[in-house]
Length: 83
Image (tube, rainbow, N blue to C red; front, side):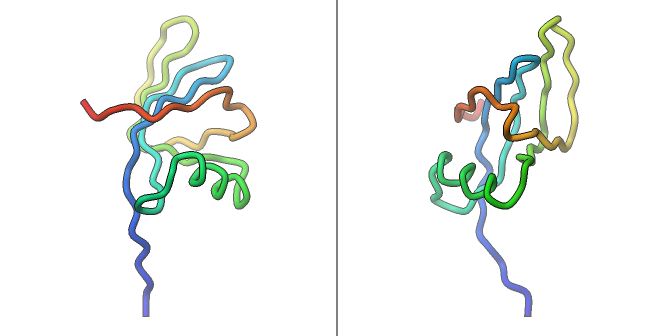
């Protein structure tokens, strides 16, 4: 029997020293962003991001369906409002 875990998408902006990423992370329903990231960081060195737009320091943009961001490279992460 498969167990289903309810998750929700949270739109975030992730900043590193080389780029800004806007995309979605998937967290347990009603979880705070800080709790979700702390939980993910205990299990993995990477944060999965979907429907991501990467903007490099030179202004170059790249869109990807899926991206793994190394957690120790993240300088700041903020939750953004849906457009």
